[in-house]
Image 1: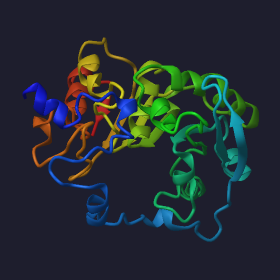
Image 2: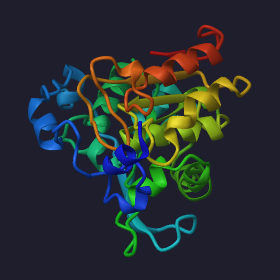
Image 3: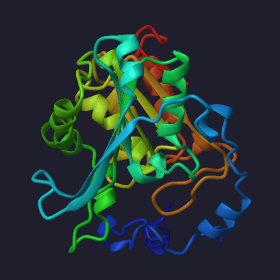
Image 4: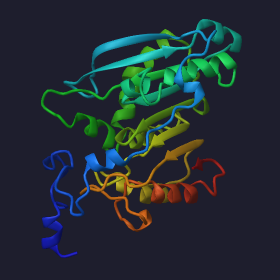
Length: 289
């Protein structure tokens, strides 16, 4: 590509000057058209509502929480603790599941309804009682892009925030297992790459990852992850679940077309999945699917 074309497409513009990556799209696609074409996600029977007889866990709210790691930010976050009956029946510490963009995952009329699901599964004994932590990104008066700054940055700052500010508070509320095999971290889009990086940088804290269409793209360095994974000794991450779709975002951060593996800075995790598979020795220590 010639430099003039590179500049004309906005690819030379630093992220903080992009306005959130919303420059004109060279192929005419738009977020609105993509969203209109999306098929609605159908909730499974365990997520729709609590079944009769299922005990509701207790949800503790932390409003306007002020972070020291991300100075000047405030955020809301919540801890959902399984009903005492289920914890007593199982015995021992609970498992842990941490969600980024927590309000959307927690919303009991939303598209995930994680607390409803966890209560139903704990009642049935199909899942050990699991403490769910739902964390919103920080709000900063001088940085409208705070969510991307926290989630997309390719370093350990966010997981240090979890380890130093969030998890100690959770431990005071309820006993949580320290075994990383019983801890998972989840997120969507920028929250998906954030979840992966938390486990990547601190695998002793999180042994499992759920990434819903993670933004493994050229936003704040995420497109370097496949190279980083291939060139790093294997880490004790047990499972990585990578969910993806078709016709995802196509902008100056990355693109997904019919042949995603041909796009160098792609939103789809094809290249990341391949790197994980190579890195794990054909899935011996880590499954990617």
